[in-house]
Image (cartoon, rainbow, N blue to C red; front, side, top):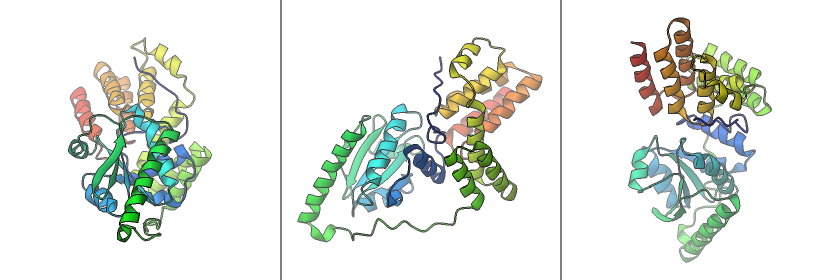
Length: 311
C-alpha cells in the first residue's frame, strides 16, 4: 500500500523527476535555507555537459559528483546535505548533480550500482567516494579529508592551483522575469495564492513558459493536499468508487517523487470509469503532466498509456 508522507516544506519536499535546472536550484534553496555565495558551484549535469562540467572542471578544482534519482528516498536526504557542505567551501569545490534516470549512460560509465552514490573527481580521476546516506557531520569529515588531499597536491604542484577568484564569480545569465521572481518570493513566504497568481500572469503573457507551467502545477498540488489527512486518504482508498481519494493519493505520490506510480493510479481510474468521472480523472492527469518538463521520460510512457486507456 502506498505511503503518503506529508511534505515537510513547500517546494523543498517536491521532487517531480527531471525538472529544469532553475526550478531544481530554487527547490534546493528553499529546502536548505539561504546559502553562501557559492551557489555558482552547484551545477546540474547531463550526458552532453559531463565533460565540460565535471572532467574539465576537475582539472582545476575537486568536483563532488552526486549521482541521484528522484525515485531513491536516500537522494532526497543526502543531496541537500551535499549542497550545504560544498556550498560552505565558497567555490573551492564544485557539486555536480547527475539524475541517473535522465542520464543513465553516466551511471553506466562510472559503474554505479546504487543511488545515491557520491564520487570525488579530481584531475580527471575518481579519487574517493561513498554509496550511502551519511549524516552531515560525516559528510563534512569526508569532504575535509578530500580537501586536505587536494591541498597536498597543490603544494606539490603549485602551478596547478587555480586563481583564488576563478570559481567564485557566478556566470551572468538572463534577467529573471518579474512575475517568476514574484512567484518564488511568494513561495518563500508561504503565500500559495500569490504564487499561483504570479505564475498565471506570466502564462498569460508567455503561454509556453515551462517554468511558470511547472510552478503553477506544483503550487496546485500543494494546495490540493495541504488540508488532506494522508491517513484518511489511505482509509478511503478501500472504496474503489471514491474517485477523489484516488486523485488525492496520486497527488501525494507526485509530491513524494513517485511519479510513475501517480500516473499509473490515475490511468487505472480512467480505464474503469466513464462519462464525467473519466473526464475528471483525465483532466487531473493532464494537470499532473504539467508538473514535469516536456522531455521528462515518464511523460512519454504515461501519455501512451493514457491513449490506450481512452481508445
